[in-house]
Image (cartoon, rainbow, N blue to C red; front, side, top):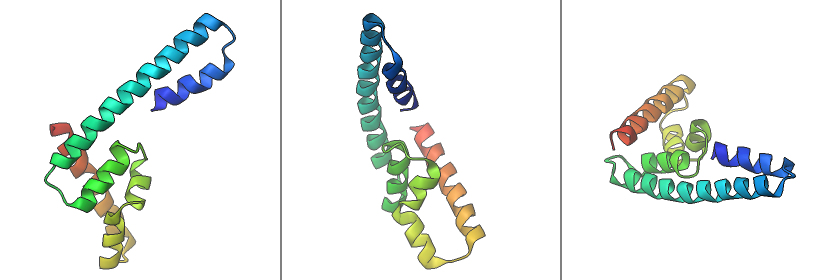
Length: 109
């Protein structure tokens, strides 16, 4: 996604038609690959033996390309945790643990 954003910015500055056409081809190829990788990530996440709220957290990061912090803050996992405790340090420790847990599981897939 980062590369796609870079190419879109670069495209705005290109004057040469041939270079612009090459850039557009690259953008289209990256979009196609992004669709493929998102489908693979979704399949992988669904196959993991983790809770639905953890899967939502993983989807927010891997398929919606949010940062880990934002993916966590927008997930039910954080909401569930906040109902259990209001202790900030525990919340951040749990976040880091879940991030590592999900990353390891995805890497093993």
